[in-house]
Length: 91
Image (cartoon, rainbow, N blue to C red; front, side, top):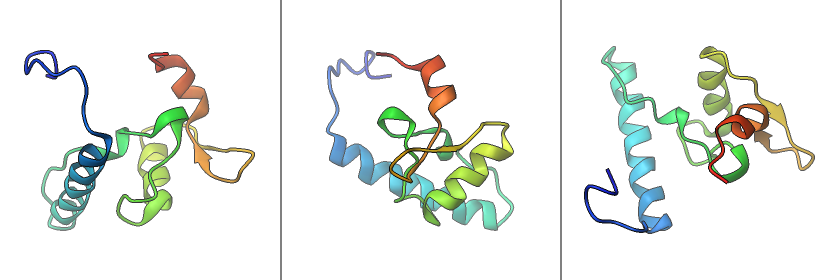
């Protein structure tokens, strides 16, 4: 999509703001029994879960685990998706 729009980069702040809007709208739709955008499949650098998503990293972890992903704690105590991230990393 970025290539089609001729974009080389995106503003991380704006991206984060709109991602949060999508996440909260998806949760409202889920509460009404509607289809949702699977926003929880997006993780931060290094596989960190997003504490700005609805209900923070608790719901983020629960939704990923419900799809079969393994959530592990980092040494700093923040939750990560380290094993799966290594497999799909673009670095």
